[in-house]
Length: 171
Image (cartoon, rainbow, N blue to C red; front, side, top):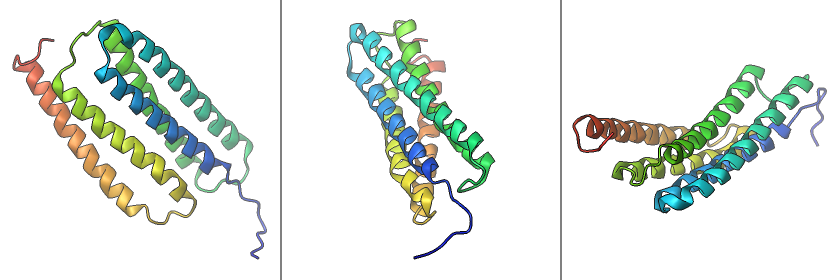
């Protein structure tokens, strides 16, 4: 048995995992919105809003733990940055669903489904990777795949913008 002279706060890992799992929930709601008829999108937006609030609660719990912990498993600024970034992802997904409802968009451009699929895969990978933060082992494949997905999402985004500006989609 190994003895430590300093206590180590490990609840952050579980909180990061919960936050990442909530992002998976949000990405599933985005996918559900794609196949939903416009009349049911408001209900999906309400569930997304609830998921976003759950994400805010998870972020606040991380910040509270950070502010009440003397010793953290890794740098305080990195914990803050990771928690904030996870929260931002959920905020952006909630905003996207809300805008679809507010703008009363009946038919979404075809490329949106492809973009949401990439986002959902990145969310799943992130949730799978969070337990790896405990040891920082076996995360290389995660970084590589998330970077690949980011490049793919950037390419889809540029195509969607090009279609919007060349008249293929009605703004």
